[in-house]
Length: 541
Ligand code: DQQ
Image (cartoon, rainbow, N blue to C red; front, side):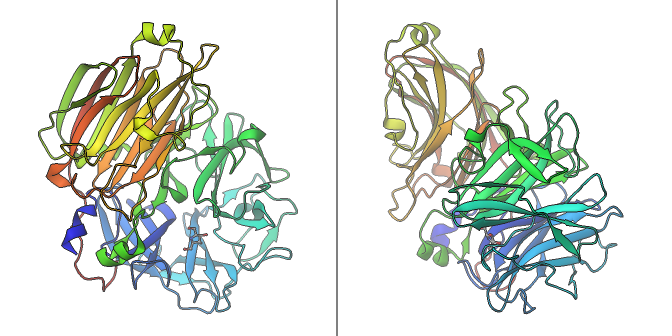
């Protein structure tokens, strides 16, 4: 349907048609980044899941390849579900994935490349002894899925985790193996949190506490912390926590039990789920992929013939300045898409003002880098206190406080009948302390009635002397917003009907009641990396 074709993105990963969900087994091999993903070859809704496959030299321009694994065995006939890749010591690849059997039992299966000399890894062999693991005693047949990448212990065994639950407690089961054929379950779990429900797509990896390079999944040592991430089936968000991994017992302990997995920090406060990282040995970085689903109706997806995007790949590293959160940032290759640039310096906005930015190109494919300062005297002297704040429970960008909201209106229609504000809101408590919130308000993003209009966001750590800064990637129907260098991230999936292509505009706004703002920003028009959609829903990815 040409009416909806503008929703296709210019530089986000998407197959040419049909349904996609979780990222699977991302890896770098013989010069190529490989990306596998949950895919329905038969329609734009979830079902008949197999593995799609694509390769890229730069994580941006993708070549779509034939399906890498299909549902052709009794143990995965109901779905070739999510899995992860491990590089063995000889450089070969072991892929573990979940099969949904002919009786819909979740089992773990082993696959490997048919030909390790093939850089494209086109053919995959499923191990003849599959399944290699079935649900252990006490674990429900449908609560046993999504094996992680394995890491090596100091005794030379491989170890990995599988998500599960016991009653309402979400858990990460843990196994050792030497050959990926025989497995031994440890009598502890890696971790578990009461009340969080089923843990899907567990991810577990080391981060350096002293520098921002990524670490191989098996790395460990004194300056290392471990990140544990779970995707909560109940609330469909990805939660992580930083903590210490104790190799002798196989247990991980959160730094702060109050911000444990599932009850604390999220990778993303918008739409972002079932994420998975991999280590890129070429650029020495850890890269995060996450599934960004649709927020329109299923009928609309069927009509347009495709559903879902992947978030733009992000590097992840520990925030060595705060020590309590990760930093996420679009991979640097994104800069190769930058075309024309426009710069705006020291633009001042009084309280209550909206100002159009004179952008010389359609504002539907952008990379925006912006900095904001609030009038210092006003911040200091204001006696309007605001003890509690939550983006989602506020009135969005229309919620006026003394020191916010202020920010950018993206994908805005000229007369502002459609707009998506991305903004800061500063809360001043009675004792004078300031806290910063970062929000994205979808409530006026579209005139359509069948789409999500929530207000997203969260707290963002802001250190003494720092300006308020944001980076925003705008790509037709997706907006990814990074605050304070990537401490807090919000992905919005939005569906304007007027603010599209050449008709998309950009505005600055300051809806604070007391403080003026000063803003400087750079706006790049972004090139297209993707080929146009095919009009047919038949055929491969
Ligand atoms: N998606 C897969 C499962 C996983 C879920 C099935 C998460 O393996 O638990 O498509 O989105």
